Length: 100
Image (cartoon, rainbow, N blue to C red):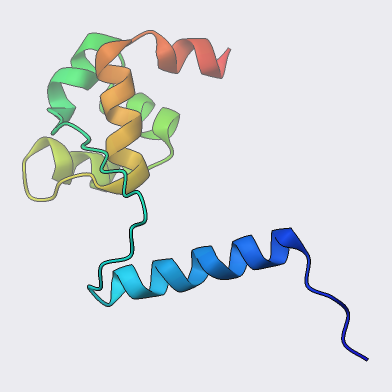
């Protein structure tokens, strides 16, 4: 016996179908939100916090080697790391406030 489909189920199903169609490049009418995270100067951000490389890396949850690669331009932070660093750039005291 099949249970009737709820409005919530239908809404979720429709959203998933639109997401798949959008991913395939089809026009869906769905609202798409683009968020642009600014590029960050990791060395400058760390300097504003007053923390050493080891302290800063530990405070944001990355290896010191990762931080060094970012600071020397061999790699660039992406995703959540880039967002976190952009937030710290706007408010350098954020690291200390959160870790207290």
